Length: 328
Image 1 (spheres, helix red, strand yellow):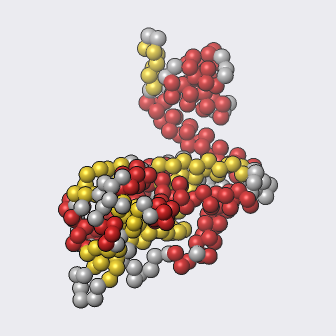
Image 2 (spheres, rainbow, N blue to C red):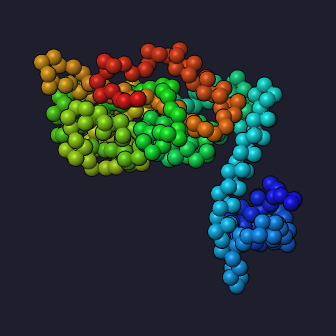
Image 3 (spheres, rainbow, N blue to C red):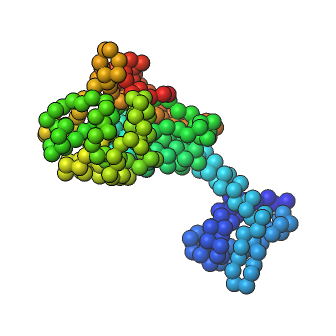
């Protein structure tokens, strides 16, 4: 038996993706007869039908569906192994694939990437930004070496993903100059239900933490007058600056606006007990990685840099005394 080759697997996957021999050939820059020969050789070698020929069209057969899953795993592992070998030369070259939720990626991560690039200038860093749920799923699927999110890791993914805290920030309740709370500067917990709210979509890590804090304060989201829901924090911030309601937003996102005086952070007083306190929402930033997938030397180096940076800034981490705290 000659056995299957990596080239045959690449050709098969291209045909399985396009369900068309000519398009697969064009993608791979080879001839259509070469594609047909590779598929025919696989089918003859193992005595299976990978595709059904129906007139001018093809459909993937059961054996083809099995091979499609396994072939992708094999080629992914080969790619990771090649990357690992290239990185053996003192991390002088290679590629690091990061996935980050929006707030982290736009405001917290750039300085970390710059620091890493200064240490390893030959390294290419590919960073994808999306909501927390998408980054969790992508890390579990092997799209990213490391994921960085501020939202929850769903129970279904916790057996697949290993996660730990590498930083934190605060969520602030913020209003614009036209809002009546702007001059007051502070409110009681019970007043949170007395204003319109601008929110993020449920998949947002910011939204997940804000809703969790509300529940800790005895307030259900349904009690709030939510008038707008946005996919990004920048959109929510712009709406608030234009005088529409209040929002819960990362301190990292509004530092400049608060300094300029176009937005104001509102203190929230919890007077449910005899001793009144100012409540805060402190949330962690999680680093995610797959529990079983091969981890490249680059990934380990970036991970170690994040952990070292967190230790150097340990005063920023959540403490048990802070209100509206999150669960690890």
